[in-house]
Length: 442
Image (cartoon, rainbow, N blue to C red):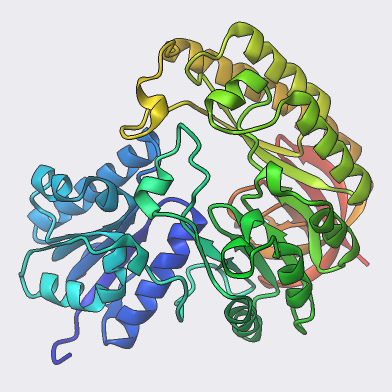
Protein backbone atom coordinates (compact mmCIF):
# COMPACT_ATOMS: atom_id res chain seq x y z
CA UNK A 1 0.00 0.00 0.00
CA UNK A 2 1.62 3.26 -1.12
CA UNK A 3 -0.81 5.67 0.55
CA UNK A 4 -1.52 5.28 4.26
CA UNK A 5 -5.27 5.24 4.81
CA UNK A 6 -6.84 5.88 8.22
CA UNK A 7 -9.65 3.54 9.23
CA UNK A 8 -12.39 3.69 11.85
CA UNK A 9 -14.22 0.47 12.76
CA UNK A 10 -17.73 0.13 14.21
CA UNK A 11 -18.70 -3.35 15.38
CA UNK A 12 -22.36 -3.98 16.22
CA UNK A 13 -24.28 -6.97 17.50
CA UNK A 14 -23.18 -10.10 19.30
CA UNK A 15 -19.75 -11.27 20.48
CA UNK A 16 -19.56 -13.66 17.51
CA UNK A 17 -19.83 -10.68 15.18
CA UNK A 18 -17.14 -8.93 17.19
CA UNK A 19 -14.73 -11.83 16.68
CA UNK A 20 -15.30 -11.57 12.91
CA UNK A 21 -14.55 -7.86 13.13
CA UNK A 22 -11.37 -8.45 15.14
CA UNK A 23 -10.11 -10.78 12.38
CA UNK A 24 -10.87 -8.15 9.74
CA UNK A 25 -9.23 -5.43 11.84
CA UNK A 26 -6.04 -7.45 12.12
CA UNK A 27 -5.88 -7.98 8.34
CA UNK A 28 -6.44 -4.29 7.71
CA UNK A 29 -3.87 -3.15 10.26
CA UNK A 30 -1.32 -5.65 8.94
CA UNK A 31 -1.85 -4.35 5.40
CA UNK A 32 -1.03 -0.77 6.43
CA UNK A 33 -4.33 0.82 7.41
CA UNK A 34 -3.92 3.09 10.42
CA UNK A 35 -6.74 2.62 12.91
CA UNK A 36 -8.48 5.81 13.99
CA UNK A 37 -10.48 6.01 17.21
CA UNK A 38 -12.87 8.57 15.69
CA UNK A 39 -15.11 8.68 12.64
CA UNK A 40 -13.99 12.22 11.90
CA UNK A 41 -10.82 12.29 9.86
CA UNK A 42 -11.02 8.66 8.74
CA UNK A 43 -10.39 7.85 5.09
CA UNK A 44 -12.56 4.76 5.46
CA UNK A 45 -15.19 3.65 7.99
CA UNK A 46 -15.93 -0.07 8.30
CA UNK A 47 -19.30 -0.95 9.86
CA UNK A 48 -19.87 -4.59 10.81
CA UNK A 49 -23.63 -4.86 11.25
CA UNK A 50 -26.17 -7.06 13.00
CA UNK A 51 -29.50 -7.89 11.38
CA UNK A 52 -31.00 -10.52 13.66
CA UNK A 53 -34.13 -8.69 14.83
CA UNK A 54 -35.83 -5.36 14.15
CA UNK A 55 -34.03 -3.47 16.93
CA UNK A 56 -30.65 -4.67 15.64
CA UNK A 57 -31.50 -3.64 12.09
CA UNK A 58 -32.59 -0.21 13.31
CA UNK A 59 -29.33 0.23 15.25
CA UNK A 60 -27.29 -0.77 12.19
CA UNK A 61 -29.15 1.57 9.85
CA UNK A 62 -28.84 4.46 12.31
CA UNK A 63 -25.08 3.85 12.58
CA UNK A 64 -24.71 3.86 8.79
CA UNK A 65 -26.77 7.05 8.46
CA UNK A 66 -24.70 8.77 11.16
CA UNK A 67 -21.47 7.98 9.31
CA UNK A 68 -23.12 9.10 6.05
CA UNK A 69 -23.65 12.54 7.61
CA UNK A 70 -19.93 12.76 8.41
CA UNK A 71 -19.17 11.79 4.81
CA UNK A 72 -21.56 14.39 3.36
CA UNK A 73 -19.97 17.04 5.57
CA UNK A 74 -16.52 16.08 4.26
CA UNK A 75 -15.42 14.84 7.68
CA UNK A 76 -15.04 11.16 6.72
CA UNK A 77 -14.22 9.23 3.58
CA UNK A 78 -15.64 6.00 2.23
CA UNK A 79 -18.14 3.72 3.98
CA UNK A 80 -17.80 -0.08 3.90
CA UNK A 81 -20.66 -2.14 5.35
CA UNK A 82 -20.56 -5.87 6.06
CA UNK A 83 -22.13 -8.28 8.54
CA UNK A 84 -25.60 -9.72 8.96
CA UNK A 85 -27.55 -6.74 7.60
CA UNK A 86 -25.79 -6.72 4.24
CA UNK A 87 -25.72 -10.50 4.03
CA UNK A 88 -29.46 -10.58 4.61
CA UNK A 89 -30.56 -7.67 2.39
CA UNK A 90 -27.62 -7.52 -0.04
CA UNK A 91 -28.25 -5.11 -2.94
CA UNK A 92 -31.09 -3.36 -1.08
CA UNK A 93 -28.70 -1.77 1.43
CA UNK A 94 -26.68 0.31 -1.02
CA UNK A 95 -29.80 1.12 -3.00
CA UNK A 96 -31.47 2.56 0.13
CA UNK A 97 -28.33 4.31 1.40
CA UNK A 98 -26.34 5.43 -1.68
CA UNK A 99 -23.63 7.05 0.48
CA UNK A 100 -22.28 3.51 1.08
CA UNK A 101 -19.22 2.75 -1.05
CA UNK A 102 -19.09 -1.01 -0.45
CA UNK A 103 -21.79 -3.42 0.71
CA UNK A 104 -20.46 -6.93 1.11
CA UNK A 105 -21.66 -10.25 2.52
CA UNK A 106 -20.00 -12.16 5.34
CA UNK A 107 -18.29 -14.44 2.83
CA UNK A 108 -16.38 -11.39 1.55
CA UNK A 109 -14.82 -10.68 4.93
CA UNK A 110 -11.74 -12.65 3.88
CA UNK A 111 -11.23 -10.04 1.11
CA UNK A 112 -11.76 -7.05 3.39
CA UNK A 113 -8.40 -5.42 2.60
CA UNK A 114 -9.10 -5.40 -1.14
CA UNK A 115 -12.63 -4.09 -0.56
CA UNK A 116 -11.51 -1.25 1.73
CA UNK A 117 -8.69 -0.22 -0.64
CA UNK A 118 -11.13 -0.01 -3.54
CA UNK A 119 -13.58 1.99 -1.41
CA UNK A 120 -10.86 4.38 -0.25
CA UNK A 121 -9.90 4.87 -3.90
CA UNK A 122 -13.48 5.78 -4.79
CA UNK A 123 -14.53 2.47 -6.37
CA UNK A 124 -18.02 1.20 -5.47
CA UNK A 125 -18.35 -2.50 -4.61
CA UNK A 126 -21.18 -4.96 -4.03
CA UNK A 127 -19.89 -8.47 -3.35
CA UNK A 128 -21.84 -11.39 -1.90
CA UNK A 129 -19.88 -14.66 -2.20
CA UNK A 130 -20.83 -17.93 -0.52
CA UNK A 131 -21.35 -17.24 3.20
CA UNK A 132 -19.45 -20.46 3.97
CA UNK A 133 -16.29 -18.56 2.95
CA UNK A 134 -16.49 -16.57 6.20
CA UNK A 135 -13.28 -17.50 8.06
CA UNK A 136 -13.86 -19.63 11.14
CA UNK A 137 -10.64 -18.34 12.67
CA UNK A 138 -7.68 -16.07 12.12
CA UNK A 139 -5.30 -13.70 13.88
CA UNK A 140 -7.24 -10.99 15.68
CA UNK A 141 -6.82 -7.42 16.81
CA UNK A 142 -8.76 -7.65 20.06
CA UNK A 143 -11.40 -5.03 20.88
CA UNK A 144 -11.72 -6.35 24.43
CA UNK A 145 -9.42 -5.37 27.30
CA UNK A 146 -6.16 -7.34 27.45
CA UNK A 147 -7.26 -9.54 30.38
CA UNK A 148 -10.17 -11.31 28.68
CA UNK A 149 -11.28 -12.36 25.19
CA UNK A 150 -14.01 -14.12 23.24
CA UNK A 151 -13.20 -17.39 21.50
CA UNK A 152 -15.52 -18.57 18.72
CA UNK A 153 -15.68 -22.34 18.33
CA UNK A 154 -18.22 -22.71 15.51
CA UNK A 155 -20.28 -20.73 13.03
CA UNK A 156 -23.81 -20.90 11.64
CA UNK A 157 -26.77 -22.85 12.94
CA UNK A 158 -28.92 -25.74 11.80
CA UNK A 159 -31.46 -25.76 14.65
CA UNK A 160 -34.09 -23.94 12.56
CA UNK A 161 -36.08 -22.30 15.35
CA UNK A 162 -39.16 -20.91 13.59
CA UNK A 163 -38.56 -17.29 14.63
CA UNK A 164 -34.84 -17.15 13.83
CA UNK A 165 -33.25 -15.71 10.69
CA UNK A 166 -29.72 -16.76 11.63
CA UNK A 167 -29.52 -19.97 9.52
CA UNK A 168 -30.50 -17.96 6.46
CA UNK A 169 -27.99 -15.22 7.27
CA UNK A 170 -25.02 -17.15 8.64
CA UNK A 171 -25.59 -20.49 6.95
CA UNK A 172 -25.61 -24.02 8.33
CA UNK A 173 -23.59 -25.19 11.29
CA UNK A 174 -19.78 -25.40 10.82
CA UNK A 175 -17.19 -26.00 13.51
CA UNK A 176 -13.46 -25.66 14.11
CA UNK A 177 -11.25 -28.60 14.99
CA UNK A 178 -10.24 -28.87 18.62
CA UNK A 179 -6.54 -28.32 17.98
CA UNK A 180 -7.11 -24.94 16.34
CA UNK A 181 -9.35 -23.81 19.20
CA UNK A 182 -6.81 -24.85 21.84
CA UNK A 183 -3.99 -23.22 19.87
CA UNK A 184 -5.88 -19.92 19.65
CA UNK A 185 -6.71 -20.08 23.36
CA UNK A 186 -3.02 -20.54 24.15
CA UNK A 187 -2.16 -17.45 22.08
CA UNK A 188 -4.86 -15.41 23.83
CA UNK A 189 -3.58 -16.45 27.26
CA UNK A 190 0.02 -15.74 26.25
CA UNK A 191 -1.18 -12.26 25.29
CA UNK A 192 -2.59 -11.67 28.77
CA UNK A 193 -6.16 -13.06 28.63
CA UNK A 194 -6.84 -14.73 31.95
CA UNK A 195 -10.50 -15.23 31.04
CA UNK A 196 -11.90 -16.75 27.86
CA UNK A 197 -15.57 -16.66 26.89
CA UNK A 198 -16.60 -19.44 24.48
CA UNK A 199 -19.14 -18.32 21.88
CA UNK A 200 -21.01 -19.86 18.94
CA UNK A 201 -24.58 -19.95 17.71
CA UNK A 202 -24.88 -23.18 19.73
CA UNK A 203 -21.81 -24.03 21.82
CA UNK A 204 -23.32 -27.27 23.13
CA UNK A 205 -23.46 -28.76 19.64
CA UNK A 206 -19.69 -28.67 19.37
CA UNK A 207 -18.16 -31.91 18.08
CA UNK A 208 -21.11 -33.24 16.10
CA UNK A 209 -19.83 -32.18 12.67
CA UNK A 210 -16.16 -33.18 12.96
CA UNK A 211 -16.28 -35.96 15.53
CA UNK A 212 -19.80 -37.35 15.30
CA UNK A 213 -20.59 -36.71 18.97
CA UNK A 214 -20.86 -33.89 21.49
CA UNK A 215 -17.34 -32.92 22.54
CA UNK A 216 -17.75 -29.62 24.35
CA UNK A 217 -16.86 -31.30 27.65
CA UNK A 218 -13.66 -32.71 26.13
CA UNK A 219 -12.78 -29.32 24.66
CA UNK A 220 -13.25 -27.68 28.05
CA UNK A 221 -10.95 -30.22 29.70
CA UNK A 222 -8.27 -29.48 27.09
CA UNK A 223 -8.59 -25.74 27.69
CA UNK A 224 -8.30 -26.25 31.44
CA UNK A 225 -4.74 -27.54 30.94
CA UNK A 226 -3.53 -24.16 29.64
CA UNK A 227 -1.16 -22.54 32.12
CA UNK A 228 -2.15 -19.00 33.00
CA UNK A 229 -5.81 -19.41 32.08
CA UNK A 230 -7.95 -18.58 35.13
CA UNK A 231 -11.57 -18.57 33.98
CA UNK A 232 -13.49 -20.22 31.14
CA UNK A 233 -17.05 -19.05 30.58
CA UNK A 234 -19.82 -20.59 28.46
CA UNK A 235 -22.29 -18.67 26.32
CA UNK A 236 -25.20 -19.86 24.14
CA UNK A 237 -25.87 -23.33 25.51
CA UNK A 238 -28.89 -25.11 24.04
CA UNK A 239 -30.88 -26.90 26.80
CA UNK A 240 -31.46 -30.08 24.76
CA UNK A 241 -27.69 -30.56 24.46
CA UNK A 242 -26.62 -29.85 28.05
CA UNK A 243 -25.43 -33.38 28.81
CA UNK A 244 -24.63 -34.98 32.14
CA UNK A 245 -20.98 -35.11 31.04
CA UNK A 246 -20.98 -31.35 30.44
CA UNK A 247 -22.60 -30.64 33.79
CA UNK A 248 -20.09 -32.88 35.61
CA UNK A 249 -17.18 -31.26 33.77
CA UNK A 250 -18.26 -27.76 34.75
CA UNK A 251 -18.70 -28.92 38.34
CA UNK A 252 -15.33 -30.67 38.60
CA UNK A 253 -12.99 -28.34 36.69
CA UNK A 254 -11.81 -25.40 38.79
CA UNK A 255 -11.06 -23.13 35.83
CA UNK A 256 -14.57 -23.39 34.37
CA UNK A 257 -16.77 -20.70 35.89
CA UNK A 258 -19.91 -21.99 37.57
CA UNK A 259 -21.75 -19.90 35.02
CA UNK A 260 -23.89 -20.98 32.08
CA UNK A 261 -25.70 -18.84 29.55
CA UNK A 262 -28.62 -21.03 28.39
CA UNK A 263 -31.32 -19.19 26.42
CA UNK A 264 -34.53 -21.22 26.86
CA UNK A 265 -36.86 -18.68 25.10
CA UNK A 266 -40.00 -19.98 26.88
CA UNK A 267 -41.26 -22.75 29.13
CA UNK A 268 -44.72 -23.46 27.69
CA UNK A 269 -44.68 -26.75 25.78
CA UNK A 270 -47.09 -25.45 23.14
CA UNK A 271 -45.14 -22.24 22.56
CA UNK A 272 -41.85 -24.12 22.36
CA UNK A 273 -43.36 -26.55 19.87
CA UNK A 274 -44.48 -23.65 17.67
CA UNK A 275 -40.96 -22.25 17.97
CA UNK A 276 -39.67 -25.59 16.62
CA UNK A 277 -37.95 -26.18 19.94
CA UNK A 278 -38.50 -29.12 22.24
CA UNK A 279 -39.25 -29.41 25.93
CA UNK A 280 -41.69 -27.99 28.43
CA UNK A 281 -41.67 -26.44 31.89
CA UNK A 282 -41.23 -29.70 33.81
CA UNK A 283 -38.37 -30.91 31.59
CA UNK A 284 -36.58 -27.56 31.79
CA UNK A 285 -37.10 -27.43 35.55
CA UNK A 286 -35.65 -30.93 35.93
CA UNK A 287 -32.56 -29.94 33.91
CA UNK A 288 -32.05 -26.72 35.86
CA UNK A 289 -32.50 -28.52 39.19
CA UNK A 290 -29.87 -31.06 38.12
CA UNK A 291 -27.49 -28.27 37.12
CA UNK A 292 -27.97 -26.39 40.38
CA UNK A 293 -27.59 -29.53 42.45
CA UNK A 294 -24.40 -30.62 40.68
CA UNK A 295 -22.62 -27.31 40.01
CA UNK A 296 -21.79 -25.47 43.26
CA UNK A 297 -22.98 -21.85 43.28
CA UNK A 298 -24.21 -21.96 39.68
CA UNK A 299 -24.89 -18.57 38.09
CA UNK A 300 -27.50 -19.25 35.39
CA UNK A 301 -28.30 -16.71 32.68
CA UNK A 302 -31.17 -17.10 30.24
CA UNK A 303 -33.04 -15.23 27.54
CA UNK A 304 -36.82 -15.31 27.16
CA UNK A 305 -39.17 -14.23 24.41
CA UNK A 306 -42.65 -12.84 24.94
CA UNK A 307 -45.39 -12.30 22.39
CA UNK A 308 -44.61 -15.23 20.13
CA UNK A 309 -47.60 -15.90 17.81
CA UNK A 310 -50.25 -17.84 19.69
CA UNK A 311 -48.81 -17.16 23.14
CA UNK A 312 -51.92 -17.11 25.33
CA UNK A 313 -52.37 -15.34 28.64
CA UNK A 314 -52.16 -18.80 30.23
CA UNK A 315 -48.82 -19.46 28.49
CA UNK A 316 -47.51 -16.14 29.74
CA UNK A 317 -48.67 -16.77 33.31
CA UNK A 318 -46.94 -20.15 33.20
CA UNK A 319 -43.76 -18.38 32.16
CA UNK A 320 -44.09 -15.87 35.01
CA UNK A 321 -44.49 -18.66 37.57
CA UNK A 322 -41.53 -20.48 36.04
CA UNK A 323 -39.28 -17.41 36.43
CA UNK A 324 -40.38 -16.99 40.05
CA UNK A 325 -39.76 -20.67 40.77
CA UNK A 326 -36.43 -21.16 39.00
CA UNK A 327 -34.87 -17.84 40.11
CA UNK A 328 -32.44 -17.20 37.27
CA UNK A 329 -29.36 -15.25 38.30
CA UNK A 330 -29.46 -13.27 35.07
CA UNK A 331 -32.31 -12.94 32.63
CA UNK A 332 -32.86 -11.00 29.45
CA UNK A 333 -36.24 -10.65 27.78
CA UNK A 334 -37.15 -9.48 24.30
CA UNK A 335 -40.34 -9.15 22.34
CA UNK A 336 -41.00 -11.42 19.37
CA UNK A 337 -39.91 -9.73 16.17
CA UNK A 338 -41.50 -11.09 12.96
CA UNK A 339 -38.59 -11.64 10.60
CA UNK A 340 -39.04 -12.10 6.85
CA UNK A 341 -38.11 -15.54 5.62
CA UNK A 342 -38.89 -17.30 8.89
CA UNK A 343 -41.93 -19.56 9.47
CA UNK A 344 -43.08 -17.39 12.38
CA UNK A 345 -43.25 -14.25 10.24
CA UNK A 346 -46.79 -14.88 9.05
CA UNK A 347 -48.00 -17.38 11.62
CA UNK A 348 -51.62 -16.87 12.70
CA UNK A 349 -52.51 -15.31 16.05
CA UNK A 350 -49.86 -12.58 16.02
CA UNK A 351 -49.73 -10.69 19.33
CA UNK A 352 -50.42 -6.96 19.60
CA UNK A 353 -47.32 -4.83 20.25
CA UNK A 354 -48.85 -3.27 23.36
CA UNK A 355 -49.46 -6.74 24.82
CA UNK A 356 -45.86 -7.72 24.06
CA UNK A 357 -44.56 -4.62 25.80
CA UNK A 358 -46.70 -5.20 28.90
CA UNK A 359 -45.61 -8.81 29.13
CA UNK A 360 -41.95 -7.84 28.79
CA UNK A 361 -42.33 -5.27 31.57
CA UNK A 362 -44.09 -7.69 33.91
CA UNK A 363 -41.48 -10.38 33.38
CA UNK A 364 -38.56 -8.02 33.98
CA UNK A 365 -40.23 -6.70 37.14
CA UNK A 366 -40.42 -10.28 38.43
CA UNK A 367 -36.77 -10.83 37.58
CA UNK A 368 -35.74 -7.61 39.33
CA UNK A 369 -37.30 -8.89 42.55
CA UNK A 370 -35.47 -12.20 42.12
CA UNK A 371 -32.17 -10.40 41.56
CA UNK A 372 -32.71 -8.09 44.52
CA UNK A 373 -33.24 -11.04 46.88
CA UNK A 374 -30.17 -12.80 45.49
CA UNK A 375 -27.99 -9.69 45.85
CA UNK A 376 -29.20 -9.12 49.41
CA UNK A 377 -28.22 -12.71 50.28
CA UNK A 378 -24.67 -12.06 49.02
CA UNK A 379 -23.94 -9.27 51.51
CA UNK A 380 -21.10 -10.42 53.77
CA UNK A 381 -19.76 -13.01 51.31
CA UNK A 382 -16.25 -12.85 49.88
CA UNK A 383 -15.65 -13.48 46.17
CA UNK A 384 -12.62 -13.63 43.94
CA UNK A 385 -13.02 -10.75 41.50
CA UNK A 386 -11.25 -9.47 38.43
CA UNK A 387 -10.83 -5.72 38.05
CA UNK A 388 -12.14 -4.34 34.74
CA UNK A 389 -11.45 -0.64 35.25
CA UNK A 390 -12.16 2.57 37.15
CA UNK A 391 -15.27 4.71 36.58
CA UNK A 392 -13.85 7.91 38.05
CA UNK A 393 -15.07 7.18 41.57
CA UNK A 394 -14.81 3.44 42.15
CA UNK A 395 -13.14 0.42 40.72
CA UNK A 396 -15.40 -1.81 38.63
CA UNK A 397 -14.99 -5.58 38.55
CA UNK A 398 -16.70 -8.93 38.37
CA UNK A 399 -16.82 -12.25 40.16
CA UNK A 400 -17.52 -15.54 38.40
CA UNK A 401 -21.21 -14.60 38.69
CA UNK A 402 -20.93 -11.96 35.96
CA UNK A 403 -19.89 -12.12 32.31
CA UNK A 404 -18.04 -9.15 30.81
CA UNK A 405 -19.97 -6.55 28.78
CA UNK A 406 -23.34 -8.28 29.26
CA UNK A 407 -23.95 -8.70 32.99
CA UNK A 408 -23.78 -6.36 35.96
CA UNK A 409 -20.75 -6.39 38.27
CA UNK A 410 -19.20 -5.18 41.50
CA UNK A 411 -18.32 -1.61 42.46
CA UNK A 412 -15.16 -2.01 44.54
CA UNK A 413 -13.69 0.24 47.22
CA UNK A 414 -9.93 -0.10 47.60
CA UNK A 415 -7.26 1.97 49.33
CA UNK A 416 -4.68 0.40 47.02
CA UNK A 417 -4.31 1.21 43.36
CA UNK A 418 -5.76 -1.55 41.19
CA UNK A 419 -5.18 -2.26 37.52
CA UNK A 420 -7.40 -3.93 34.90
CA UNK A 421 -6.88 -7.67 35.10
CA UNK A 422 -5.91 -7.69 38.78
CA UNK A 423 -7.50 -10.54 40.70
CA UNK A 424 -8.49 -9.69 44.26
CA UNK A 425 -10.75 -10.79 47.10
CA UNK A 426 -13.85 -8.63 47.55
CA UNK A 427 -16.23 -8.61 50.50
CA UNK A 428 -19.77 -7.65 49.49
CA UNK A 429 -21.14 -4.82 51.65
CA UNK A 430 -24.26 -3.71 49.78
CA UNK A 431 -25.97 -3.69 46.40
CA UNK A 432 -27.39 -1.11 44.02
CA UNK A 433 -30.04 -2.54 41.72
CA UNK A 434 -28.42 -5.29 39.68
CA UNK A 435 -24.88 -4.38 40.82
CA UNK A 436 -23.07 -5.47 43.96
CA UNK A 437 -20.97 -3.14 46.12
CA UNK A 438 -17.88 -4.39 47.92
CA UNK A 439 -14.46 -3.63 49.33
CA UNK A 440 -11.08 -5.21 48.74
CA UNK A 441 -10.13 -7.58 51.50
CA UNK A 442 -7.26 -9.94 52.21
